[in-house]
Image 1: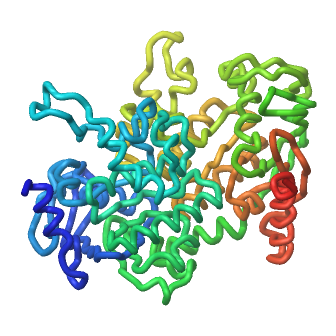
Image 2 (image 1 turned 90 degrees about the vertical axis):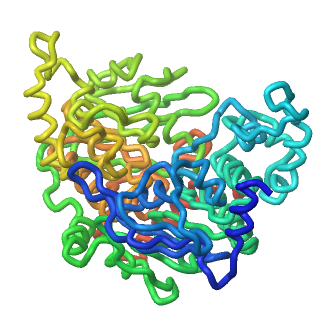
Image 3 (image 1 turned 90 degrees about the horizontal axis):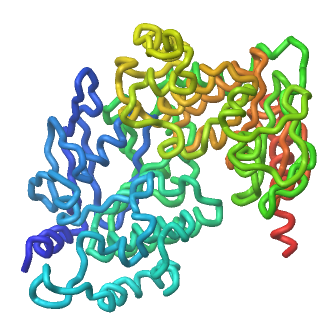
Length: 536
């Protein structure tokens, strides 16, 4: 029996004994304590929720269990035996697999090829001289594929042709194909539509019935109730509590995550909202008249003024991001007119848009916004390097550093230095840097595409504050969000899209609206956004 089979046999263990037991785990980076003295037990057939604000230590903990980060203190025991997880392959040999928030699949390979990547099945005794046993690999995953909703066709096409849910399923099957007993799910519902989330939850229940332990990281607290068996909460790199969710509420979990003193300030941001407002003239910043781009957009008409937040609502595929791409000049419209500050305009490129005072905070922060190996200050100033260059030629390091420090202080970005690489920041702080980059160009309009996706409740409040401050100083904002309560709270008006067109526009009074009125507005938005699909 090989090492992997021994590890799998040992890991199966007793239902009373944790599959994985973490004691006193810590991780120190230069100048930063990322994790300190954390305990965690993962038992067979358990869905274990892991909560905490961005920067609380969740990513560090799952990276240690995944073998991508080595701890500086503490021990890990697997089925009672102490283990060192030195790399991801060792973690897999111990039956621990991870589905990361950022897809780690090779987009041009099929599901079968991704599942066996690096562990290909070879015909013939000599691995180097043998050939791929594609038939055996296909047969090995076919039953799992059918069980988790993938067709024969799905596992034969490049995974880039699959939707987000099916890509998650491919990663789950990749784990199951090699007898995983602990599956770590990092924000698995990020980017999924509501019906896809429910489907994924059913798959998670199936995994639990198999006796697999799930360590589940999520920022959406409503998902936990009725699904998680145990919840562990981290704050500032330390263990706060491990609790039974049946005795908790969303509010009590938030208090554990952020602490009462921090919570008070953040509740004020959420409750008070825009306390100042814009007192100047409400000049029009952007107007679209009957803009179409076939086949995605038809006859889009909307406008936004200074001091105003326009929300864009709609289900996935309704055309919200496609509308933003036209405004940004990334896509050219086939017909219609665009007005910037009441003047007819042709926006040929994102550079044109920036010069006209239009900035964009993209939905996919990791792939479309941050430059991971660049410093915080360079990620901010790169949007307009001429402003930090002498005679437009040579970067002035001192000026760049001063600019970075100013935005770090103004936006409350948590970091030890503006020289730090942005990839080392939490998701919420990375989002603040992206917003700082937009603000550095001194825009009239910022388009926020899913601005709080993948960040915790405290960071969400800070992002709302930044949006409010921008429009209260005379800016205009368009906010695209799949979180309906968020959209209702933050917006002045909400335009609802369905199948590439605007099907209605509703006024929103945000925090001043009573709960019943908010619910009624939400129902009207959902009705407009889904009516076509429901009728069909």
